[in-house]
Length: 311
Length: 287
Image (cartoon, rainbow over all chains, first blue to last red; front, side, top):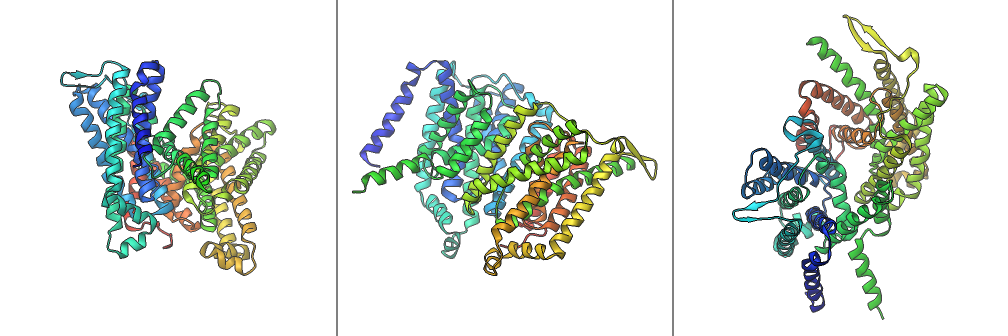
């Protein structure tokens, strides 16, 4: 990491840490949401940017984790110290199952993950005796572990910031490990990696499960932020928007998914305040991103920098 | 019990009839051009809404079907020509792009036609119920829909298997470059196939809107089930779409009847198992 980059990272962290000093509760809520969905986008990008698999079912892990935590906390009064890990575990277990999709590639993988995602949405939507149907599970309390408890949105913002920062560090180590490099190799040329003796399916499966675990963590963080969860969390738009966030920000990077999440959620908040057709605007963002910024904003910035550096 | 079982079989078949209309277009356009178009659900919904407005204005169900189909042909052409063509063979880009298109179409349709469930009015002779042998009573409309789809499926199969155009399309599915090299204009061929596929989807919206009703979100529900049809049958295979539609339609009907809360499992579970053994579906070819 160059000195300039390190300085930028430190600057961003300090700015985020000082944000509650200047921002009101609405902006704190929005910032928390951006960070949580950025983590979801990052989990999608572990597959998309590093392993070359485009999954559209990460809303499932996100939602199953959120539902598990919410149901345990609200209905069974299970403490956070158990409910949050249980949510993480439930989402990851679903990842073990859905990971079977890595037997397929390309368009089949995309279509199958879409179908898988719909099963979870369908169960959340129709099994109303357990999931609460369209109303979902409400009144999720703030998390509290032992004597430590979150008592305000600002407290929770700091907790999310800390957890996500640790995740980002771990993610950085992961993608630079031999495992991460193997994934990149498979993305570049699967046949070559196979002829070198790598079991590509097993690596992709492991990546899928890890990515599901990350999405589940985002789900747990989401449910304590949102204080309720309903089938929307498992819906197709959540899954596909997470992918869009990663692409818009820049795939294969750590900052990209968070930038994409900030832009999309910021845009949605802004547009929906004065324009009724905000879903249209979101649709146009999809189209514009694909046609004009397939490398994302990070890619765009790198291209501009290269152009500027050219004599 | 047996009566219900038979009724569910007919229910499932009528859903299969509808699914086939949506899935056949999706699967053949994919086979020919390797284009994944997630907007087919939105095509279905838009065709249904346009048909609804035509049916209300003119009172003619036939005009509604033709008009709904034609509106989608126009939209589909514009989207192929000005958007999808710039994605090359990048499926990821196609999926995101067409999802974006579907969001826009769905949102604009919501603005125009509102958020309530709307039903396309059907002509008087298709309303009501008919008595089947054995004392069963069943809605006439759904029965006619099954016959209609059988007719369409038969016509498509003849077109695909027994005519020169069909032979060229099949050759294009197998090897597009080779067909192009023999002097056939594959792009023009694709415009024709795509127009037919769009028409079928728009038409499906009208005939489906008459019994499933049209509402915001219907575009995704129909698309996902059509995707399962295509995955089960094998991408690019017309016969696969027929068999797949029947399997999925029946599974859905029996699932909703026997396990209403888990009907999605009944639908998607067998698909997952099938894929473990045949990742490319029943009729899919190895790439």
